[in-house]
Image 1 (cartoon, one colour):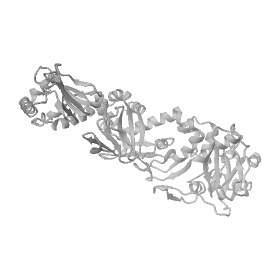
Image 2 (cartoon, helix red, strand yellow; image 1 turned 90 degrees about the vertical axis):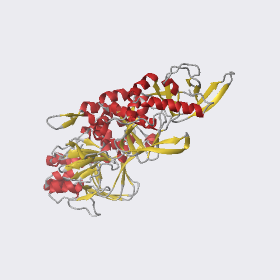
Image 3 (cartoon, helix red, strand yellow; image 1 turned 180 degrees about the horizontal axis):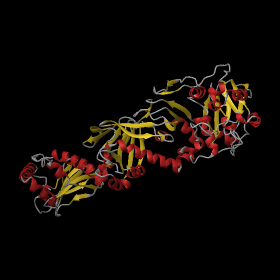
Image 4 (tube, rainbow, N blue to C red; image 1 turned 90 degrees about the horizontal axis):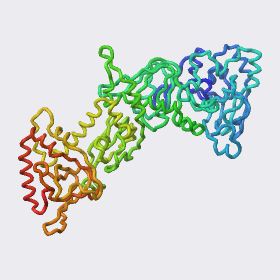
Length: 604
């Protein structure tokens, strides 16, 4: 069957106009976007009711349509009357003149009976004035039963024709045999031909027809806007559309999609916003399945979400969305002349690695101290990065605001350390998540990503160094930043609660800065008694003598909490002194001052 048997038509007027010659009529949907107007019937039956409500009848000549119209009869139903039951023999076609009819199906198919069937029954749609259902039973297909159950929700009046009456009329007059499976119109599409539904069995496809609608757009109409709430999937039956997205250089054209293309499928699996704007390039006929209806369909066929086709489509759509994110600009390669094109093979590999993660406003993505297990890229939304003040969870300061195209979480993966800050969503946010196991593959696929991550990491380290007295007088007299260079010489280290970072009496060759956590400094006095000297926290440093002298540690430093530290070896520090020799004098002066101010605290 094809879209002309999809139950509810937003374009019934369109069919009447294009096939019967009447004028086009359009209105707007809830987002202000143009769409075709629903047909409606008054309590009296209009002469063109068949071609208005059931478009494929409009393909008949006037004489044949008059003959087929005589086969329809009017029937009134009381509230909660059963019109047809799933699994029963073919029942015909129905047009709702007035009232409401509920269409439902059983999860598990026709084999489910009795109380089990009742418990597994799922409501698919409500048909109202001008809608029709059961049209698929008029086609000469192999389906010998009603795929759904229909019952009235209130008093109803319907036009109906039985399969038997229709088939007898076709035998007498073959010209009447225009039905849903007819190939007369180029605007036909079978649901089984849409990749998303390729693996769906015939019964569920017949049920699915009650959950899709048909829309028409003319050239220049916007089908969906970037940042709009993604409300459903679109399938282009006829025409073409342009896909574009905002970038730092303005609106950027991403692709042109033709007949047979699918778009917006990510909306079916996540509550997200559109990552691009889609505009009709010419008149388009589009099938639409809203997210709410897709959820209903999963109620009767949950296997769809696990299908290979479904996962492949999501992977490809993920790859396509990467085009608008700055970090992936390195995947552009030069074509003929000034033209550039994305490396599609790499985009596809990345699409398989990245997963969408939906975050509600106010939700925490991770907290400081959590294990670093993923890198995140913001597809749409906004996040806040914050840190506690002196370890007090009730007091925090905002470090940064992140928006579309920004990424975070790379520091934990680059340094193999715990999270150093807390990240929360300040708006409903859609993230692309890269698990740690794929991180190295990701770096190899995206040229420049590792350098970008390293630069950001070193920039943060340099900023931290600038706040520490030992390094705050570094003379920045070069075209490049000396502290950034110094930052490249530091390494991240992690220690567990109770673990010793350094031990009194051991030889030392490292200087440490605490990024996160607390540590206590102790020493053994000359008479052999242990002495607690101090407690160190964020941005405190120790072990500085080891950078200048080959000597033993004068104290022991033990973690009171899990600790993340920056460390630099004597060898690396010596390299930096060649660029900044005055730093040596500054170091010695501060060490002497520190020793004089705290006579009871060892210099190490």
